[in-house]
Image 1 (cartoon, each protein chain N blue to C red):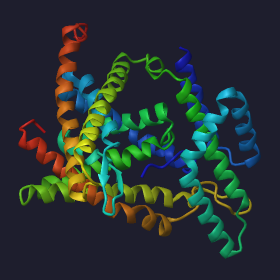
Image 2 (cartoon, each protein chain N blue to C red):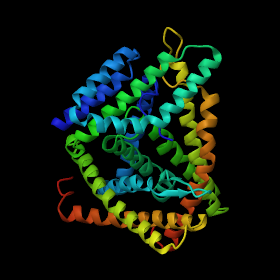
Image 3 (cartoon, rainbow over the protein chains, first blue to last red):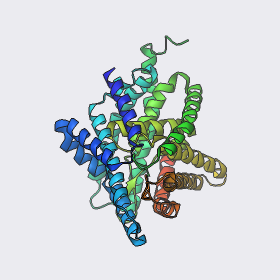
Image 4 (cartoon, rainbow over the protein chains, first blue to last red):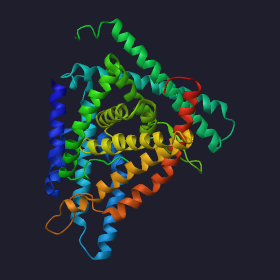
Length: 185
Length: 213
């Protein structure tokens, strides 16, 4: 219940923020969010700044340049864009830190199963990929050329695809053997 | 190619949700009919696969690399609608678990890459496969990625029309299509080629091992 509420409040907040255009309001909300996040603030703020840096710097600099050349003002836009994107990213990272996604989607049994299974399978696939990468590195004496790296990437993705086919069948049989589908008509 | 939160006007992203909602509903019905009891495990595994595929590096000339988008591969291996659903779930997971991408723009990203990109890839592949399968896969994936990038660029490019403040400064993304089209689509003309070649390499490996794809 707590997680569902958290998810709902965050969704409303995120949509609401995109309707706010006054930098004063956006700045106030960002300050409040930074204060409310408590001890997690420095870590979350650093992650948020890294996440938005590339796009925001490019868009801001591009706008400053084009507006300056045209002799138009640019300050308000740059402030608004950066405050809004930073606030939204900070809130999302804060949510990611506190939300138990599996509990948040407990309103739908099927969706909950998809999320649980997907999270488990992601770990399995990531392990497989790491194994492939380490094996490739251990077999390469020097820096591999483009064709070799392409072949390796192809094999990695191919192995994932095959594993996915096998895992889907295996998980389905596991669910069937535990009676997951028995209460369906 | 993802659009982050905060750059797109509500009237655009809410409109995209209005378009995506029936598409998601149709996809669930279609995939459920196809997979029956296997829907949940299939969808979960495909979602995990799509999530991890985006971490496979596409080697680029000069020793650098980019990330696989993976939608073309998913669409060619499992069909357009499973790919669309799996990719949409990946966007949700990326947003809620990693804080990457954005939830407001999820529908735009899903429609551009997950649905349009996948549909173009499969359509072109079916059209050209009888002539030359490898070329069909490469061209299909290339075109799918390029069309998706073009859509993303156009969505960004219409933002200046979505409103400005009293000083005339834009409220959202400030550049029109004259800027967004070359900046977004240009690099994808090359990245998509790498993705297309890699997709064909993967499919040929899978087909050689005779695992149904």
